[in-house]
Image: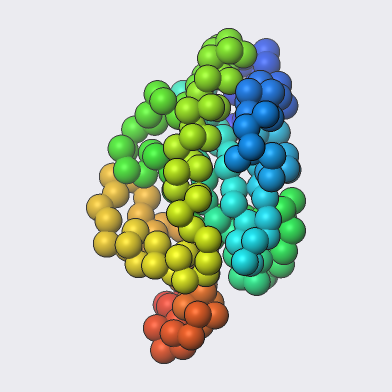
Length: 194
């Protein structure tokens, strides 16, 4: 709803924002494995059970801000009171999300744009944000890498949301730990989820 309001105020559709970003990135060899699965959302994979996600989400104040992360194909998503599978790129949802706003507390200008920004500004922000995303996304290749990143991020100080604020954290972290042979630690995380 917030995205529709943003598009209505600016006169630019969410699809047009996504088009500007996609045109900017389409010749980047790091981007060719991503498929567009929403107006301003791209996903790839799975590779080693991991989908990489990159998107712009609506924020307060007529802004869209970038975030990126991973979806584990064998970890179900909690939808209300039900679990649903997310095994393809179109259904992938964040199990671990990196959102620059969480660290800064504010929406950083390098990874956000407003509805009144020009297509060239949106494309430039898309490029800058994707470069930052790839720096993080390329470091995680295996489930063990992802489990280690959960551990690292659990010790970080955030100004907005931390891992505990994301519903999927304990479920995904627990199942990833079990998948890499750390059954006891994984069960502890699953118990925290339940």
